[in-house]
Length: 189
Figure 1 (tube, rainbow, N blue to C red):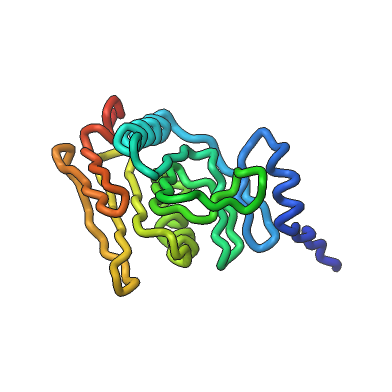
Figure 2: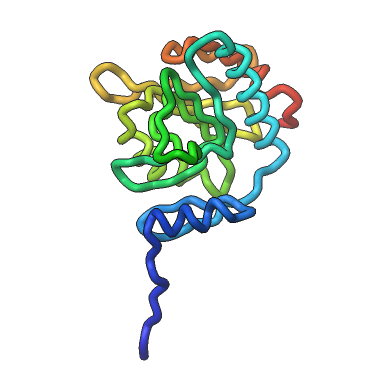
């Protein structure tokens, strides 16, 4: 019996396919992983976050990007699309297309049943290798809950959990405050 293995793709082959595709895919280790569509709650949370960051970062040297900005984790080779990305200072891109960000300051992932374990585990393992990353937020979409990981001076990550709509997350690294009642505005919980 012969076993047929799917040929592995180079990053260049992945990007040639991805830049023409109508759907988004992650890339790691020569393989492409198709990304599923998002729910209404997921989209509302992302829109609320982008709006809050945009408003608060308006006159600062930081930019906010929604889920179509690809991020490359250079140390591991992962290409992925976080739900929200903030970069402070000059954004660094892989090439002249300016569609692959290399130096995110803050990454947000909105959790779903199909991605929760990955976002908490292996994906965070990848993200932690980004020297530029200071903050990682995981947002529940079916109830008010935000897990905020902040990189400490010693390189360790400190977790803070916010569960109540009246709470406000202070993100010192980007100089923003995120009220949970604004993050979850119009989201049916």
